Length: 111
Image 1 (tube, one colour):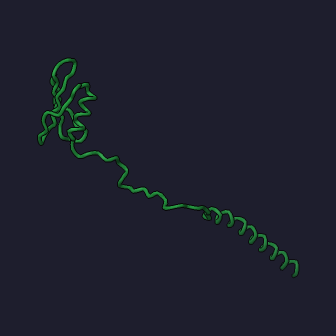
Image 2 (spheres, rainbow, N blue to C red):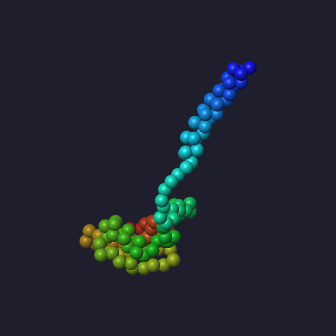
């Protein structure tokens, strides 16, 4: 009788020690120690796109015309539909018309 009781206590002790050994690493994963100064950075979901203007600004059209090769470019006219940039290209007068849409798409290019 004593050997049966001792055997069951030994089995119970072995199972308890085994359970405690496996529970310790699992609990250690969630324990963290560190020192922080200030707040952690917050990432906003809605601010993932860079800001782009809704319409074509005259300065944006001017920079695009200069990248297209128009020298001494200046804004000649701005109305509700287009921005007109004038300048010189290859020695001739040049007129570039940009739509008032995002990205300043080219409507016409006259040399």
